[in-house]
Length: 495
Image 1 (cartoon, rainbow, N blue to C red):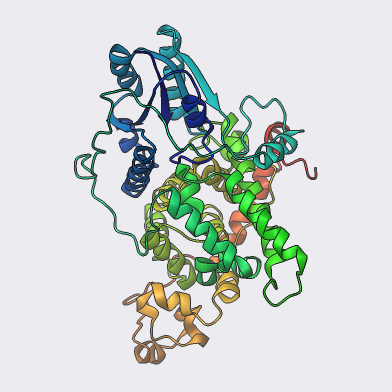
Image 2 (cartoon, one colour):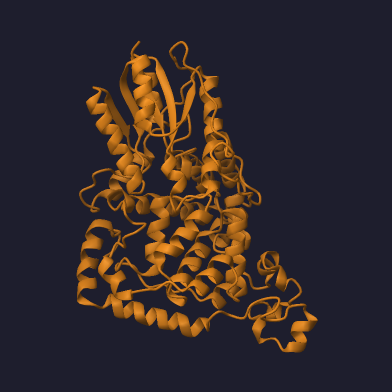
């Protein structure tokens, strides 16, 4: 019996899935497969929270496929071995998948699948994902391609499919079977495609009204941000779907933008759409630079910076024990929840790279393991930008003190996540080391006993890091590489 195979990767959904629909509309019964590579579990950027989230979303996908007559088979091993086993039984004629933009290991995997298909006379068809353009020659017209793609009609959701007799879903491996210890997260989101749509609806119904105003604070961003990033990371929802519903909301608001019901929405929806464009813009970088986790976009500039690992500083930074209350609260919150808002992500990396002068490769890996919504294209682009190793972006070294007073003026977020400071009043919460010994005793927070003093003088160290960064950026070879980086990756909005 001849069949078509749909290979699911980071596209764990039934709706707006061109690979699935194309297979269903073809002449053959359809097999759906998902493969988890053993080497992924050993990668330095992968954490059990990523695998557990993926498996839980996969289970929801399996249920959705079964509800329309399909089935999903899980394999732990090499995908080419899974394909070979199926080929012996069913005679695969077509393999369909959606493109995945990932690090070098996933590129190598995809190439091995393409080679297997060529050897076995199987037609391999891949479909574009979101706004990322494969084999893009220049950034000059990228925005036009991206906008056209994400504005196109969604692919219809299939209501039935035909699987060959005897092909049924098997058991998805548990975390225990994989030898992984689950990491409990505070208020972990519900997995799957339906949950993704519910989160989107809750954002567009009410939560997103204050998005523009509240997205910068970790305290208000928890509710005001869309919180769709974990679902986008595994493909439970597409940018096209999100834009469709966002623009529909926008049309309703435009009818009477000054009404009580619509106040706040105009600017928030505009800002939200800008962030969706950024999503595609940054992943496009990884599409042509699959080694961004180990090689800077501007390696000459990175070489001149010559950052070195300092174990004491790294430990304090990664555990949220730097002695800077707001920073420590953000890091501890991230570790506990798997999520923090965008501005604070930038601050966490900026402090590592400029203030503590730590290597971006090591600190970037720590943050990757913390994020439930780890998306390599966005993450490593931001690590490069906030570490000053692109050569085309402004040097932005975040002041912890400024972010603390701007985003958490009363210290409520600090007290929530840094329990050692729960009794410290507002006037001392941002810089508790300035309290007298008597005040420290009164507020149950002895510096260097209950809570550490700052690991370095933040202002002095930050300025020194900025100075060294500008010096490295001014080198002729750094400037020369920056021109090339701009040609390949730079935004065309302005030069």
